[in-house]
Length: 202
Image (cartoon, rainbow, N blue to C red):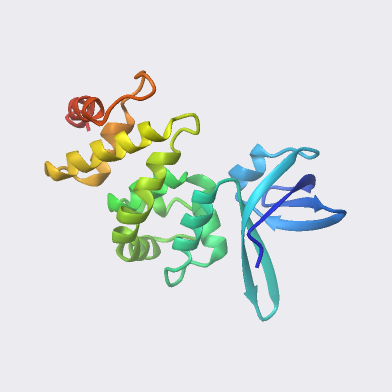
């Protein structure tokens, strides 16, 4: 229904913000980490998902498109509604949640309010393949907003190369993401060599 809202925050609490858009105040449900990062009086753009039920219409907002996309992926899992999906993204970044899923780390997922061990396992079972193909590339390209596109592509190529060598994608991603203090425009071969050194420490 609504792709995004852009306006001034007029009020907020731990789980909601009210955005004034053309003199109309819209209440948007947000994660606690998002709410904590926003201040009354500042301008903000939130990417949104509208959940419609018989007795309620709620709008959920996110600071980045990747958070919204991951939220939509989570709510495809049976038993994971919008509230529970938001709880996951309140305590975990997309990167952390994605790695938990592809690493079979149900303990990390179940640390979110309302997510028990069985639900965490269901999330892993339903989304492992989807996260592997859908999220990791986006996380790599969004892990630092200042990174150039060529760096993101080089990281993805290095991760793919490590996977082809037999390493899990989770460890491959961790190893490459540990490569820091390299100049912008670093090629995939360099990321691969440094990633290989890091992967033995995991």
